[in-house]
Length: 144
Image 1 (cartoon, helix red, strand yellow):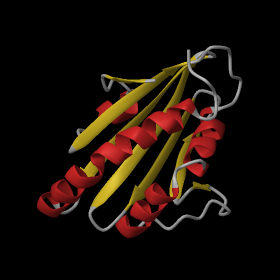
Image 2: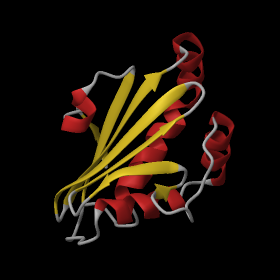
Image 3: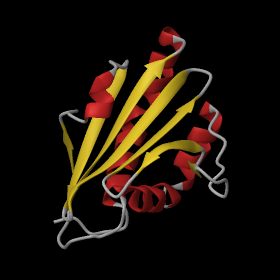
Image 4: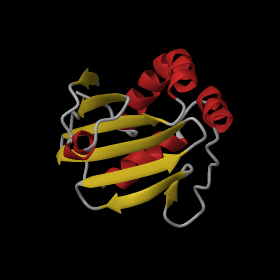
């Protein structure tokens, strides 16, 4: 897994206050949809990450139809999943994209509702986010 330039068309459609993207090149083909590997990756998040997202206002509702870990499924196809949520400080857009059977990306875009406070909070949690995003894009498959 590695961090890459943000090139996803959904992420580039409207400029956010923060964006990052991570890519995984898989050792063997994976036929799961982006929704499936994102769901697996989010479910496998460490307890500390789950506590942080609850503090931010995420209300995990994975059992709810149309949601993954408190994020609303806006689009889900064999090639892409787009998740969104709006919290007190920011709006989150995540895009999982299957580029081919052995390559996938996860892009996160943030839109700050309260820019000064959101930037301060984000500065504190961004390193944990990047580690977690790399785990999510791996989605339970060993990368090559």
